[in-house]
Amino acid sequence: MEVKVIGAGLAGSEAAWQLAQRGFAVTIYEMKPRKMTPAHHSEDFAELVCSNSLRGDRLENAVGLLKEELRRCGSLILQCADATRVEAGGCLAVDRGGFSRMVTERIRSHPGITVVSEEVTEVPRGPVIVATGPLTSEPMSRAIGEYFGQDYLHFFDAAAPLVTAESIDMELAWWQSRYDRGTPDYINCALNREEYEAFVRELTTAQEAEVHGFEDANVFEGCMPVEVMARRGFETLRYGPLKPVGLRDPRTGGEPYAVVQLRQDNAEKTVFNMVGFQTHLKFGEQKRVFSMIPALREAEFVRYGVMHRNTFLQSPKLLDRFYADRRDPTVAFAGQMTGVEGYVESTASGFLAAVAMAARLSGKEPPDFPRETAIGALGLYVSDRTVENFQPMNVNFSIISPLEKQIRKKAEKNLAIANRSLEIIDGLAAAGI
Image 1 (cartoon, rainbow, N blue to C red):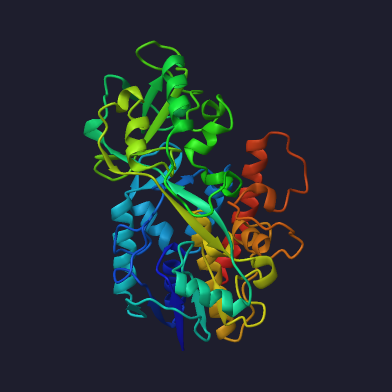
Image 2: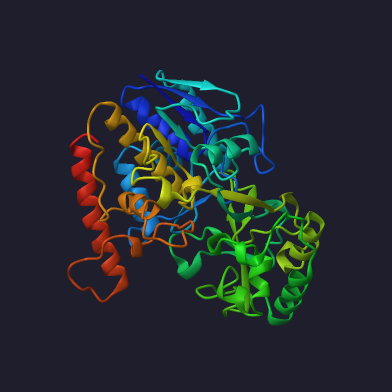
């Protein structure tokens, strides 16, 4: 039986892989390279548009738990991420280009997957998984709206600039991970109080690129443009991406007033990402204002930050816990368009949509990923009809079932929740999900 997958991003690639691994003939449709969005730069699948980090990799962190669940379930995306990992302290960051190339190679070389390079402009009859992403093309966006008979919701998302390593002034910057966790994987660029004040003043008054319909209230809190954050208060950045806590300037031996961190963006360490500097300032303004950071005065920007309008469904009204249309479970959706936020969360939605689809097409009940697991908790959040003001969400421990016993220390409690989840996951994997 053939199953169509629309979109070869993280969710679509994961879904196609899981279906093919279960013996289904998969045709995956991807509009690149025939049609590109302003945010895409590569023809490869699973392109990381914003950061190259898949965030924390510790079990005490909810996204770290979600990654480990996916690893144990045979996730393609996690296999490729682990294989192309670059050092980033306690985070899982990848060589952006190497990661996407590996996903593309694995998908194209799978004997059960056929790749079709064309834009799809209507929702096909099932079985199909639609994973066209938050940057769904206008024709497909209209088609999905017509399919459900209502408008999408939307929010705004932003990508951070990239600078070359050789243009960073290492006489003013230093290598260190916060609290010296792991190896010193971040380049730290300090600002004193006077430099910080001048930087914030210029940042809050810099010219923004035109984004139709943009309002600060519509910005997703987890990916807020740095200039919007700065407008919320003079000290806001010092408690956010410029937080100096856990760092010490070797020139002074003390904690700096503020610190901009840079994370490697490729395996060669030739390009670095300005951590937390998602922005929609005009390109010239980005160059002017970000060059006020002392260690970046001569910085060479190989990519400026960009702002996108991201679109998502009113999923609680439309989808079940397996991301399938409540009216027709042979039509499923996956990725950020469902209201999960983040690379790993998108991957998890593609995984669960695919394994549930495979089970249903085989005449079986979908595997029960309960709320005690991160994978299951995300699906249950997205499909919770009691949610009145549905908003995109990253995975977090508050949506996972609490422990029956009380543990006071947060890290110990989270680790206990993670261990409980992984026991369930191991049982599902042993049963052949």
